Amino acid sequence: MEQFKAMNSMPGAVRDIVYRINERCINLGYKAYIVGGAVRDMLLGVGLLDIDVTVVGDALRLADDLEHLFGYRFIAHPSFKTVTLNTGLNCRIDIATARREVYPKPAALPEVFPSGLYDDLFRRDFTINAMAVSLEGYHLIDPFGGKNDLQSGTIRVMHNKSFVDDPTRILRGIRFETRYGFEMDNKTEELAKASVELGYPGMLSAERICAEMEHVFREPRYTAILRRMEGLGLWKALFGAGKIPPSVYRKLQKIQKGCPGNVKFPILALLEGVHGGKVVEVFIAYKTLYRKLCEYSAREKALRFPVRDKMMERGMLYRLFNGVEKEILEYLYWTAYTWQYKNNIIKYMQEVTGFNFHIGGGDLISLGVKPGPRYNDLLQRARQEIVERGATDRSEQMDILKSVVTKGEEDLGN
Ligand code: CTP
Image (cartoon, rainbow, N blue to C red; front, side, top):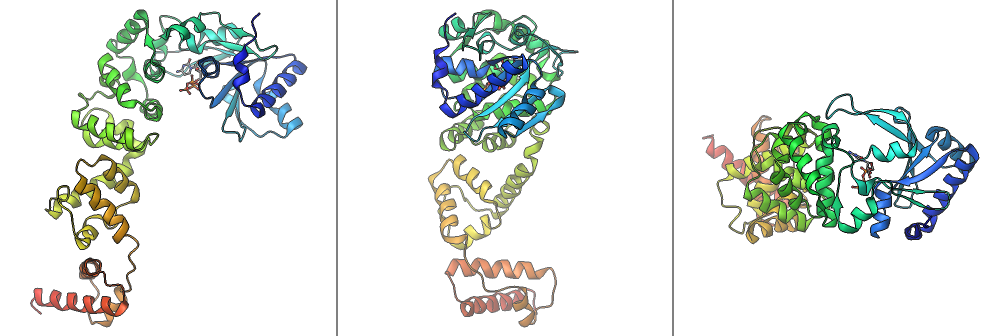
């Protein structure tokens, strides 16, 4: 059997851990294999992040042994019979008991049963993810032609029910297409469309859709993924929402280029620009952040000033952005259409945030203002003017506060 040379691309320290895993397996009478995405990525010669090891044997027992012998610290997931080892080497190793899966109904989580390697590979999404490397001798095991498909750039399902059992796989398929420049073969694409037409993706829980979308936004070219999702009808099937408007795509392009890897911003852009359907329900975990963005938008509207088209003075910037979270400011910056608005945000960050105020509620009492709802308003007005004038001393700031109070009393007709 041919040796799997790509193992050499694995960092030495990680290979040492894998070697120890295999040693223990031999002692326990188990067989161990590297499986799934790690095999795919080693064959492609792209960077490795996580390694999945499948053992024909008891993964929990194996982890106990490794902890005992080498002091590794595993996190166990007993119900799935899997364990995770954070190697501290920028690479996570998951060890799972080989299993076959039975899906009780479409789009539900599967019931799992211990199995041999063949069933464990067969239960997987695509042939390119259904290869294994035996840890005894490092031989490639490829019963479904994954290596060929990898060479021809083909995403091919393992069986006809794959997208019925687990419609998240359609999205995974699109991710791999976009990431590696691959294509689904005709049959796989037909099966994806059929699953969409029969409404299976819509049966996924909101949490699972959200988790898959977060994976999408970790990809460097997620706008292409969204377009492909729309093309296959998957966007509508998952979110029950209309098309993603061109204005949202424009924002997404800016975010994709300006802050790759940021998952929150594209989700904010969708929440902001796609209305109806399940968008809010799916991204419920981002509701608080979205609410902050809405609060800012309301403030901007109430200001009745063309903040997006004109450079603004410091005082106005204070009024507009004061208290707005840094993350929201960053989002506004990256999605801005005009240089004026971008500059306004930068000017606010550089010249206004971090401004030290030496006045407070106590000073209003000393000036004889009776405590009440006007306090906040008076302080805000004073602070705006302080920033505007760049008044850094306490005495200057007090003078401004006094004049604001006097003017306030005049306005009230006192
Ligand atoms: N898998 C599957 N069906 C899914 C999710 C995962 O069959 N819905 C299988 C695939 O064999 C996959 C493996 O489980 O290779 C590991 O899954 P995961 O770590 O999520 O994906 P990777 O293939 O490693 O992809 P990525 O590079 O995006 O992490």
